[in-house]
Amino acid sequence: MKKNLAVIFGGRSSEHEVSCVSVVTIAKAVDLEKYNMFLIGITKDGEWKLVEDIAGIEDGSWKQSPVSAIISQDDMMKVQPIDVIFPVLHGMYGEDGTIQGLFEMADIPYVGCGVFASAASMDKFYTKLVVDTLGIRQAVYVPVLAEQLEDIDEVTARVEAKLSYPVFVKPSKAGSSKGVSKADDRAA
Image (cartoon, rainbow, N blue to C red; front, side, top):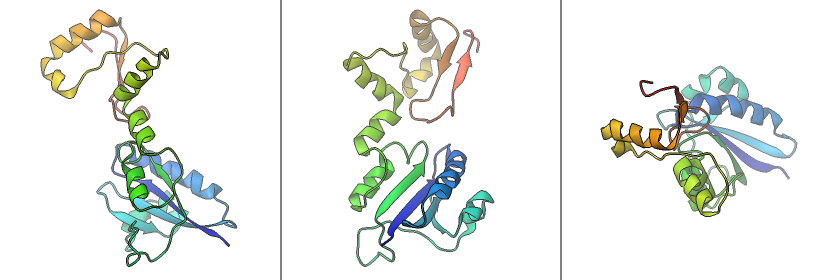
């Protein structure tokens, strides 16, 4: 008997487009002899859509799907039971434990790390704190909190005291290379 697999992609993060490319590769690799695959796309506005096919993802028409998708453990809401979910969401709300928490609350098994591992590893600052306590070598870093940016001269002085140029700046909670910049000197 085939298992029901939901593959979720898109999402509200800055990596929405990357997720839409990734899901095509993954969906094409699913063994349809073993799984009934349900594609669920999340628009940038947070709308959940049941997607008819891979072609709709490739051409972007999935966003106009008239059929909404809902994940719930409530038996009154279930139209199609799902055996396992494969999240192909990148960045915030996908790799940060958020969606994993939803799956756990709905009591639906899923592929990938659990809530804590996802949350801790998605936030680079907290990952570095954990790694520091374990004595694992890592690149030298200077943490900067959003509220500290009000005094950019003080932040720059702290960075220059600990690092030499060039330095790389990366948002703590963005995935891939989104938001990364290189500063060759103080003016950059």
